[in-house]
Amino acid sequence: MGDRASDPHQAIRPGSETLRTLLILTLFAPPALWLGLAGCMVWGCPGPPPPPPEARLPQPATAPEDMLAQHGVVDRILDVYAELARQLEGGRPVRSETAWNAAGLVQTFVEGYHEKLEEDLVFVRFEAAGRELRLIGTLRRQHRVAALLNAQILLLASRADLEDPADRARLAADLRSYVRMYRPHTAREDTVIFPELREVVTPEDFYDMGVTIGRRRRELFGPGGYERIVERVADVERVLGIHRLEEFTPGFQPAAVTPRRPRPLER
Image (cartoon, rainbow, N blue to C red; front, side, top):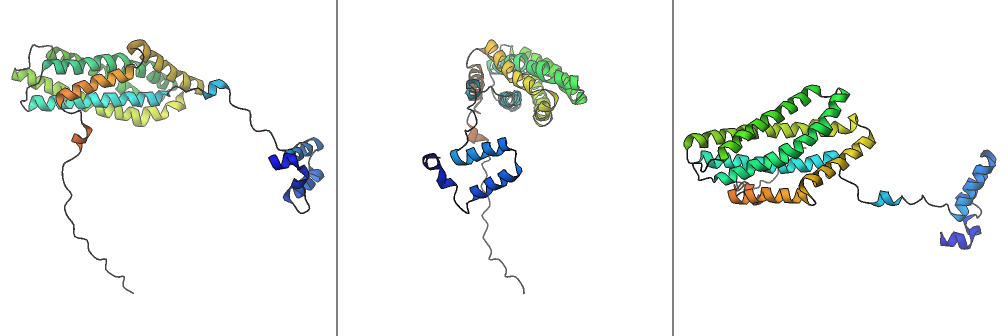
């Protein structure tokens, strides 16, 4: 650009591509068009205008992105429930406070925030569009069943101790029922509902959903609320001894295999 501006005639020399283009424009293009294009070739065209200031600001997470992050928290709570059930069934001492704290997280985060967002923002839009109605109906029913199961878990965890074998067995069964239902529940949402969400809303509505999700989270949990919820889940994981991710890696060693020389190809 600096060379062309200092010596514009250098860009138009005999046999150059620029000269051939100008000749073609002279013959076939309207005068206003070829004059403008010729000026761009010689002196350069202005670039696209810079984006408005608001476009350069951090954008809110989209609704599916935020919901998937929430499902990450739900999955870790389900791991807690599965570990509680395992320890109860194995006869290990389990503090009722630990089960109570885990069920309280479900009541606060899963029922009071995550599920309400799904029902108020996502499910209603699929129903209005007449899409995935059978699946949406099942998801709504499972929300209700999950609330009943968790209420029973809270009731059993409110006991002074968990020494009674019948209480331990019932609590373990309720915990396993919750996990067994909720894992395929979130998987259907992740693989069917969230990928189709853009198809049932306008771009403006899609953007506004992300803003609404963030606003509700701040209203319920304050600034940094997501991080504090994750830390509360991690506290329960530490009590149960499942806070180290590497401990979930299978401890087997692959069998030693003696490499064989490849057989030569027959001609």
